Image (cartoon, rainbow, N blue to C red; front, side):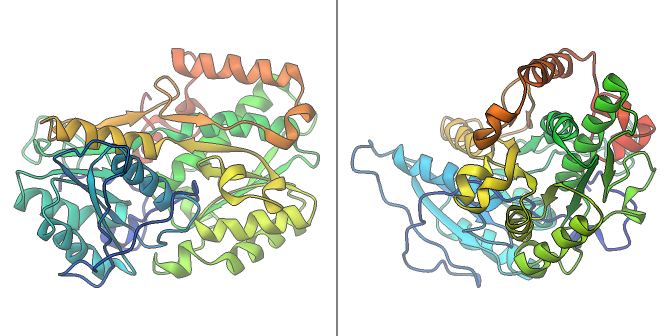
Length: 410
């Protein structure tokens, strides 16, 4: 196995664990056109922007379940594709309705003549790996993935090592760093001392958000030593396997997991009943239901993947204190630019606070309610994370546990 599968001890098969997470940015509406052949999902050709010079390169994206319009994960990748179209690239895309669509959707883009293909989400790991091997002249990238050159045992230098293909780029994001900032902010803002979080499913693309949130809360408790420590409900990162007690949507990984706002409302109400006043949902469109319920209750939420205050819009965005962001759109566009210039891959991109690949969004409606002292503390914490004197992994259990959940530097 080559694509990194740094997982918790889950009972489901790995192929069903890797799924796209997130709720991201609103993007330009996709163009419509002739459906791609070879798969059940739709594909729409982009057209050259009137003001852009044509680029002799075809850039494409295979979206995950949850689909376009999720105001999140998939929409962020779509924005990167639309930005490429505006620069003159020819573009196509496909959308998956379920995990059985992945291989056919990727092949449909190959059949369209795509020269760079981005696949979105961990669930596409096996289909992407196969396509990478079968099409060495096409540049592939996968969102929320890092290639594990050391093989399934994560030990380098033995027989199961799997060198990274020259035509593959992992687009990975250490969102635990920005979520640590979000956790500190939430701990400083909560009125009840209880913060909640949950995920659609547990894999590094989601657990990093929750690990970072937990770390930020623990750092706040360490620094401020409140009489009653702030508590996180839904994820205990001190455990070797937090999934045993975690709050997870579960399901098949399709729309029942990532596009179920009714379920998100139910989760929010349970948190509210337990005294939680801030929730950080990591569950795609399901999380949007949580944000709505928190708004209606006069409570608060923290967004994921993009600045959800902008993507969700009024009135429910009034619940959002901030969002823990990934610059997926920027990294997707940069991949297209790089591959069109002859760099087909062979090395991963990792977004961090240091390179602005992850970030904490503005506080919007709550800016005046967050003290300058807290803002200064957040700035200092960011500098400490970038400089390495504060590490997320120091607050979430043993180093081996942190590494298994995709948190480096332990």
